[in-house]
Length: 199
Image (cartoon, rainbow, N blue to C red; front, side, top):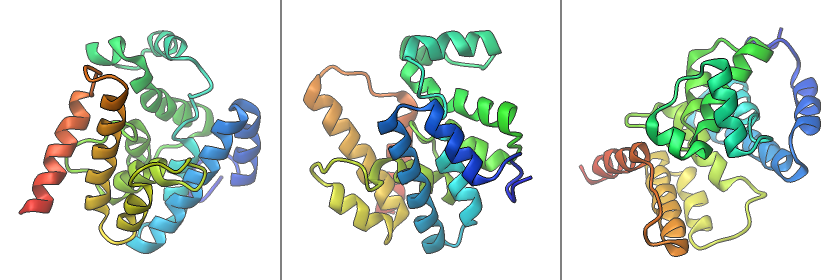
């Protein structure tokens, strides 16, 4: 039993993920796990728990969006109407389910961080914010406008990094399509943390 309660070592988990995920997604996952560890050291969170969140966050990403939706239906994973219409948002929920079912992960905080790592949610705790930001700034990310700024903020003010990440995502999506879908939960997260920075 691993120290965070999963039923294998991290070496075995990495081996499993390398076989399950496409090569680029696997490299991203390892990058996120180690970025989570670095941020955990900075903010006094358990390194093991942060790394577990990073390892598992994209465990369902080997499937297409339609396959993820069908798998959620098959496994009775709850989803909203918005998630059904935009099933790419569901890989966090399915990933948390698979981490619990296949690896025995019972830590509710880690599972919640995995569930919401794409959208965020209002009043995220430090572990949630670490995974939310690490997913965006890990070393394998190709450079884009504001990446260095967000990386710097991540180690200075995690709430500010959350806001900058969401602003960057919205700017990117709207640059591709001015009428693109922005998840309601993401916007609520943005308003919440932006308000905290202003107060």
